[in-house]
Length: 156
Image 1 (cartoon, rainbow, N blue to C red):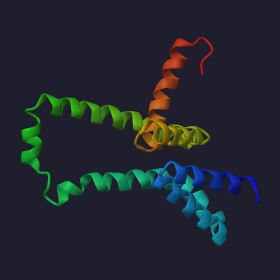
Image 2 (image 1 turned 60 degrees about the vertical axis):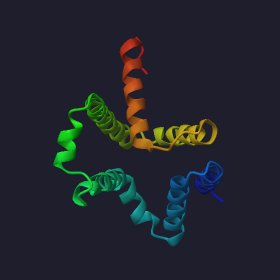
Image 3 (image 1 turned 90 degrees about the vertical axis):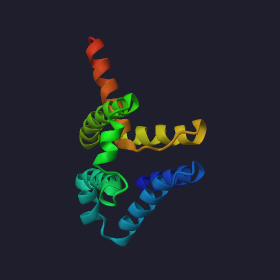
Image 4 (image 1 turned 180 degrees about the vertical axis):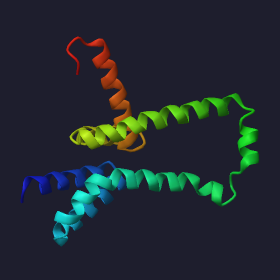
């Protein structure tokens, strides 16, 4: 058994023990692609387009309450009268901007993904955290790296 497969099986086991269904599904899908013989054509596509496709799917999911009528313009107008809504609006903008930088970090520095997955699994398994995904984690990592670079004479 080669090292990448052993690593994937380790991630599958960690996902199982941490009860991280997303990680288990991701590993299982990648192993199926690998063993089906389509890996040489499918995996490069997933690597280059997967994050963008995932972000698109998340965006679609977020917009569902609008198309179903659960959230309308009246709701938006009513919410804007609340100071908490303005805080949520600012937080949404902040997180979206940070996540955009996270996408660039994941695309340009893929080894960061391993550390992000490990951190997420540790947080879920030990601290009762919620797996919010590598994009926002990468965005926060990117922001922290830029702060370190700013204050460090040697950079990161």
